[in-house]
Image (tube, rainbow, N blue to C red; front, side):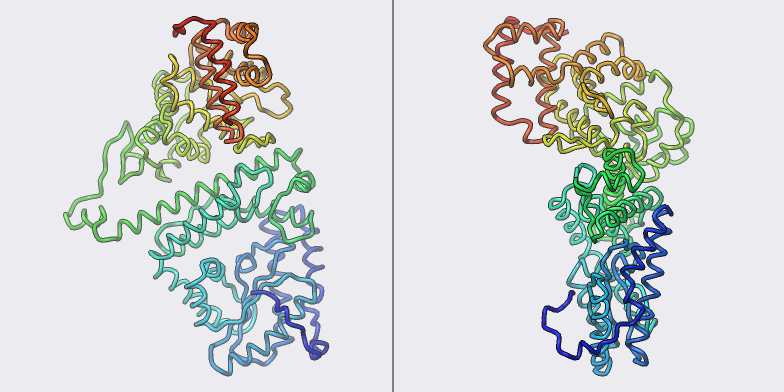
Length: 591
């Protein structure tokens, strides 16, 4: 779709410029500005009503008296989600007869040129019902847009027939289309990154962005799975609000929160600073990305259950029920997903979420949506945590392979901040350092994952994992020295969890000094004995803490990004490590 580059003939001078679209660009901008303090959904619905009204007027004025034609909106215009500068994505439908095709060709010229001349960005097509179905069967992006087809003017029955046929085709081809839909989502993520972790997020194309949200509708339209609502709808509406603010600030149809406009966008939306804006975008992106993962998994399971040879098929032939395996108190494995046991009362079990987290991470199970909802009904954890809870939390941290995915599910469900309130200031907090690819909170989790793979190199692996989990807890708004500030927070966090004072003291040292080994290795002369002496003095002369710091240093760097753990840096750290070990004697002491 798009405007032809061909030179227009002289007859264009006689094409009318109806009032319907002549001032639509200005009217949209003025309405968006007037409603800038209204709820975003309300503003977008008002903009959609204005666009619909003006396009209907335009259609009536230039296609008057022609039967068998329909003007319809698709994409964001069809969903009534278009922003103040969004393109108009329109399709002129005809009945496919020779007469209808000729009428549509003549009407298209009268429809499209005045819209362009009004300064509006237009994506257009002219198609029969059969052509719509053919395009939708071959082009995934076109199919997704056509699923949102909405009548604007003309033959409403034709629009209904087109929408119904496209939906029916989509459902009948679900088994073929699902892999394509998932592949498209992965390709966007590789091309545009993850919305939650970008300093210049692409609100539309990044993983967890608006296209992923639209894909939820496409997935649910297959009838293979349900689309989640509630928090995911709120997240999408927030991204649309940010998109609208970006378009208001730039005056362009863009979806990228560039560094050069981020401050203006934050101010427009009432945020104190850019980091607050980016944190809100990150939170919304994580909710949508998790919803896509959950919905995709549900669709795949539906396909598997419906196929010959699937567990459900075989169970039905045997006359048996689906596989339910007891996992832990109140928890069962239902065909690879962790679910609440029938009749179990979540409201009576504060430890259920942590116990479920440990089980999911150690066994590689995903949570059912209903189990995540049940967590919200559980009582608050006692402070300090009971021993059972600490044991389960330790199991979670040690489960390196599945820790990140389980933690993300718990985070989206609001459980992490509920368990550890001190986590809130770093939750979704962006990092300006170019070496970091994650938000502060996710970086800490990734550090635990990598430290867990090296935990056999230290004497106290739990100390290593706890230090990794909280090593950047001091990266909060307004803090200059995050290592010192984070160390000061550790006693309170350790007391909340119920860790012994000795462990808290060791954690405090490691958090305070977590940058020291890398700093000394890259800025000091490793051959100077005073360097090793000063380093060990900062660790209270503890051999075991040095070995733990060595692993923490590598895990921290690797979790930041490949740029942070280069061969050069590794060699410098290994050089200093060897010299420190030599100064300590042949056998490092382990508590």
